[in-house]
Every structure is written in C-alpha cells, then in structure tokens.
Image (tube, rainbow, N blue to C red; front, top):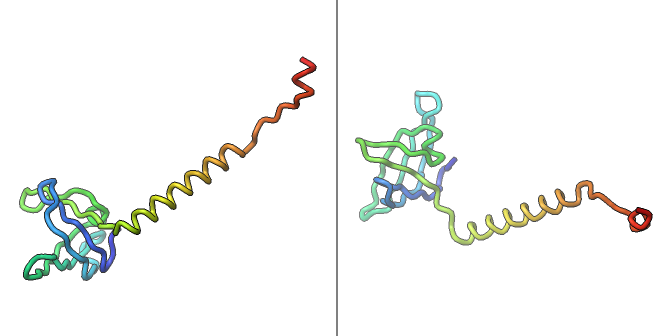
Length: 114
C-alpha cells in the first residue's frame, strides 16, 4: 500500500495521466476507506482529496464519473534495480536450498555391485 510522500502515477482511461505525491492519508469515517490528499504535479500545482479504499491504494482499478482510474506507486529506477537484484538473489538462494535439501547419494561401490 502506498504511504505518505510516495509518488504515484495516475492512469486515466487506461493511459498514463499525471503524477502526484501523497501528502496525507487519513482514515475516513467509513472503515477500510482513506481520505487521500494528493499534490498533483501540474502547472500550477493542484491539490486533490480522493476517498479510496485499501484495494484502490494497492493499485486496483476504480472509476470516477465512469472513467477508469488506477493509481500505481512510482519506484525510482535505482531502487527498482536494487529490488530486482534482491529478488534474484533470494530466488537463487531458494533454488540452492531446494537443491541441497536432501540429495540422494549413491555410492560408487554400491553401483559396481549391481
């Protein structure tokens, strides 16, 4: 889930629309919903407040006035590379652990006796 000060890309009608920074997340009166104050990077800067549920904050599609909208967190390229490297290392470690779990050892002397 996105948090305060995250940069997000707002997709409008299934196309990139604009970038914004989440300025504030406050619980709405309705449980599971949040009031999201966004600073929209336009000229001049604009402030929006949207009421979104937790799924929408996680990137689920929703509509506004019948127009499809989706919010996705922007990850800086350097952080994205680090995340990919960490994921690759983790997968490599998992494969190594899986492959070395309980290897079947066959004695050469046993093979000769057959």
